[in-house]
Image 1 (cartoon, one colour):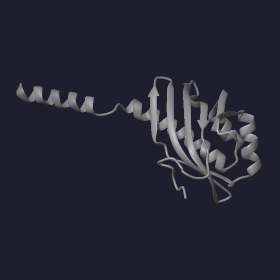
Image 2 (cartoon, rainbow, N blue to C red):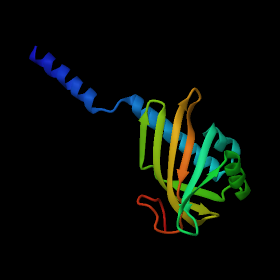
Image 3 (tube, helix red, strand yellow):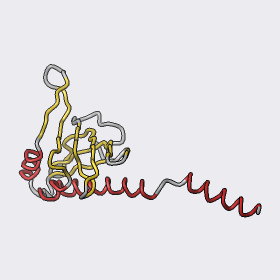
Image 4 (cartoon, helix red, strand yellow):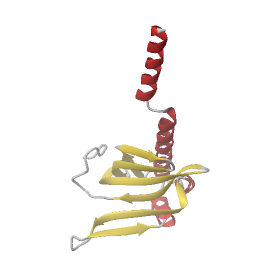
Length: 161
């Protein structure tokens, strides 16, 4: 009887202390979408890039304008695809470090410092934030907001000079 109780207690403690596989799988799926996006960017593959986004996705850049006020520039998916496509295969290399993934049901939030290289040379760094939603087809990016600058890269930025 004593051993049965100890075995049951051990199983309960392991179950409580171990993250659920479903949570890990959801996080892995979110990471997979982002990996596909950045592979698509590196390959200038519009089909792969578009597949990462919902049909109503929004991309926004946050930065300072000449008078030091913060401005927000909104890009369309088509505009983003045209910009990446104009660079050609292998020209754009964005290296991200996923610093956190938070998931609540059908919503995921990702925080990722990045370094952007253009034709092999450092161009800028910043922070990407992604909001993804779980659709019938899997996780898709709904919203991207990011910063960019030439120096003073955020903590955790990969390979920044």
